[in-house]
Length: 194
Image (cartoon, rainbow, N blue to C red; front, side, top):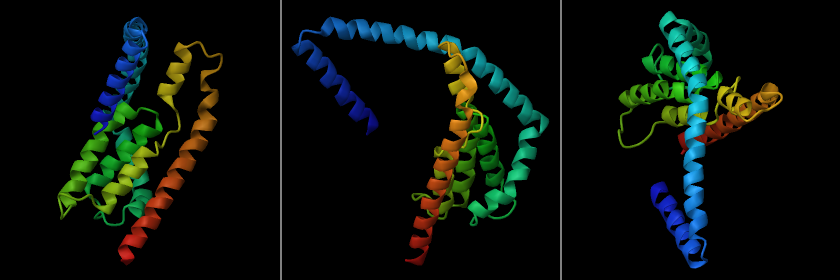
């Protein structure tokens, strides 16, 4: 559905530019944005490679597993329907731990594995369980302590103090997390009572 919406936007934009005689502007913008995107990838790649490498080392050394073990009691409260000691809690904790480091792309494999393990517990394979929805809310709220990607973008564009946003990001992630999980809890309780 999103592809259709974006396709419509693109067709409308190109049609409008042709009708108004600005087709050259669209052509120039396509070339300029392609170059800007490529430059951005080249600038960000080394930083992402370093962080993903560090996360792989942390994973292999057992650091992420230790963080996951520390988070398991809290996550067990958020996911009461997941059996104690189930693999999915470890993957959820790993996903949250990596997201806290601001590495959303490195957290994706853990999130996919968590959903796969949650699906194994799902009696109705065509419908998401409350645990799956809660995990999606938690993941979407973007639990981030160090916004690595944003800091790297600010460094690339010459910010005088790229890390000044850390307190604001922590406040935003706390508000989003609490708000999302509270709404999830209210809806879950309402649906369980029906």
